[in-house]
Length: 208
Image (tube, rainbow, N blue to C red):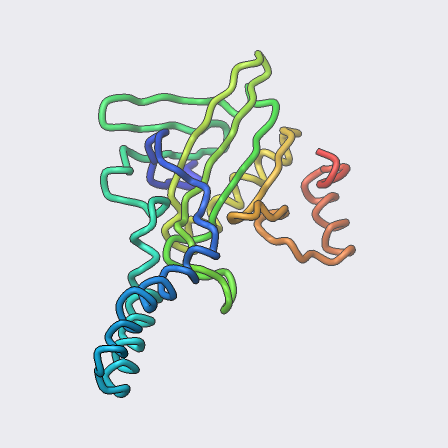
């Protein structure tokens, strides 16, 4: 049974998101470089305000895609299929399977959903995710995927539930600051955490 299927991203792609500081600095830099000099040249203030509005609109809607952490078409090299017992990487030239029973530890880093904000004050996320897998035999593997919509994010929760219940040491982190999450949430109440520990057969989420 297929639990989730997502685009497979090449290993060389940067997954860690750009610091939001640079998203603020970029429009300020362009404003200082272009609009302020126009003011000294005697351009009417109404025109300058209009240019500033255009700049803000472009930055909010398109500027995010100019940064190197944003996904490009040639970054996608296949698909990753998750079932109840394995993940299968299907590339343009190769098919490779990894069985969950061989995993000893998984660290899941993700940047929410491509093009969406986690909150109103948040940046637009690139949707990239990375699985760092440790095997029982000491080997390691890194798998990068792209989360394009809410369904794929929810499908991945099903996969993580399988890992938790199998006793695989599983850790989740979100965004540039690598916020600790439990099934992609960071603000669980004490009662919710106790319920999840019982449901997923986990003694602790914070000492893993």
